[in-house]
Image 1 (cartoon, rainbow, N blue to C red):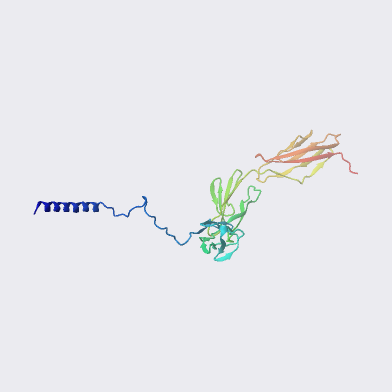
Image 2: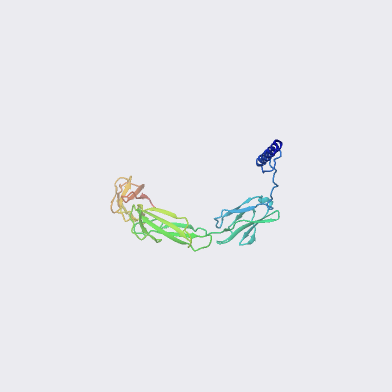
Length: 306
């Protein structure tokens, strides 16, 4: 082989190696135009997203339900309220009052927007809590020896039968579960009773009554008999005490020579011989526990009846 042929063969191999190097460094990605990749065409979902929600979901009779719309305005849609899948009316399309419904009814709303129907969630009317409608202690004026009781009644929006439950305490100690307190009471005792309505499903809000057994004042009996023998004027004040306390009788600012027996209430007045006219006396009866009754009397001497 001549020198010329050797030179040609070496140049051929150099060309092949150079071509292979440039091919291995070439990127497989498509060429960028202006430094940016070509944008892909947008993909359309083919439908718009609407939703309708009723709140609150925990509803009872006399609740007000509200609508929350997403993706549209309620004023732009045809709105309907459904009770048990039956169309019903509402003064405000965005609100619904459940006063005319009953426990267990299912409430739903329907919106038609741009020819498409959207249904809300379903809200079921739950049990209404019973309530105490009337409650009071009996007797209203309690005296030692009486039996303390409670008169109570309840009501229920669902027209369920209401049972009244009682929890008594006397001076902080449990004392019974009936409408009557079957334990003896004395002055100073503090009584509480908790009254709770129950409709067979749920308990309503309780009412608590408080009563302290206080001292009751004496009561003066109005039927008095008077006598005057031209010298001594006599009468007797009588009183009773609801608590059975012993009583003490006295006269406030008595005229001269007038006395009263503190135990019996007998009043005696040694009338001056020449006295003619009227005197006013005030009788007081106390029970030594802070209770007092008073009675005012006008005594007239020397009046002639024509």
